[in-house]
Length: 337
Image (cartoon, rainbow, N blue to C red; front, side, top):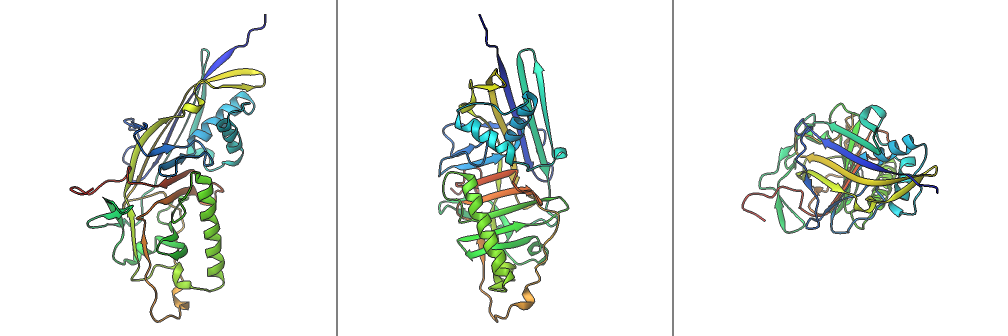
């Protein structure tokens, strides 16, 4: 009688997206539960709930890639999530090999796969805290930072990539020596898939590049002396279990594997001291070509749902994407809702 051997797989994933030191070694992550309006997704095209904060970090895809490499092929399964993971490993080259650690260990009948990365990137010039905070989603007063009053050094760290109006725009934060960049986009966070949101942002950036190249509305693409930037402080240290994968059987070259643990922990901080950024500062030189005597003032307030994307400079795919849909991961001002 033929006996099929089933080997358990343990996927243990840690991702750290941090700035200015802080919590690289902390393990006291809060486990996401059903009471929260925040969720991780293992790949950007996996759906989340429209009203939730949705977080993607590339560590799970990297762990899956390591598992597939160890077993010598993709995991065969009819489960949509596993199919998405298989497709993702072909597309996601978001980090260089030296940027992360991935290991595969055989422990008796168990196969343990771990993947981790940490990016620690401060601003060259810290931004200012916003006195009194800002109102997010028309109901929560939260801590914020940015450039409430014009400062040339701070303005040099902000690039405007697209501007339709104060309710729809894209900026890039560009301080520091590292080969990373952060894009913040307001007005593009509708829907349930981060991949679709990212596509809309990319299309807007391309439109902005064409508009700027034609010399049209150049005031949009630099930070003027009357412009104001406000961004909520976001901090979290969270873990989750991808329950869809637990006890799933996958076949690799005829050998059956069973997923027993599929977890991810991600810590992220965004405040006035630093974010993940690109290495080359953008110096806007279009001001001299603007003819208007009085320039429109841009109020770049991230006070409604927005998208955060972090990637290595020149990489095709981000290694961190987050839809910030509610104030659950923000810090409220004392004495206010």
